[in-house]
Picture (cartoon, rainbow, N blue to C red):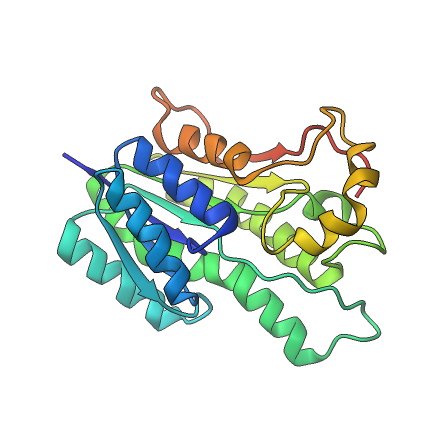
Length: 247
């Protein structure tokens, strides 16, 4: 029987890489994003791998829409085995420049979206007695970023919230559901390309493994968390940054 995964922010970048890795592990993938044409491309790639793929154009900050998507996937495909909360938005403005609306939107997309989809999938996972969830935090949740970071305090706050949510929900949702989060360092994606183009060589000097990360690096960890048996990991935040000490 096929396993079912939902991947938010699955159109490109880390989400696309994770969708590929999960499909390789035998998952059918429901993609959620605002980028319809790019989701179609990713869905086509998954179908070419012999797996089912569906696309759901949605604002992940919309609570009701998240519940609708989960209900549709469960109705059409069956129970959801794995949820990857990957959707995110950068926010480069500092405290004295950001507006209230920009702050609220940053929290909504990065943090509230995780609540929305976890709230929707958790009842089914608890009822079936099994399920796994991973949410994408950031190294900035630990170090707060620096003045040159593409995403400053609002982004760091939202991503730190994901770590707190993960730890609390590991207690609430266990033992049936294992939930973890991932803290990538500098990853070469569409979102971060402007930063890596301008400062890539400088950043590499502060990474022990001597290179920038790729979506495939993160995807391997996601696929591991989705499939490893036996599993004794929950409530954890995994740094995947090549041991980065400069941001």
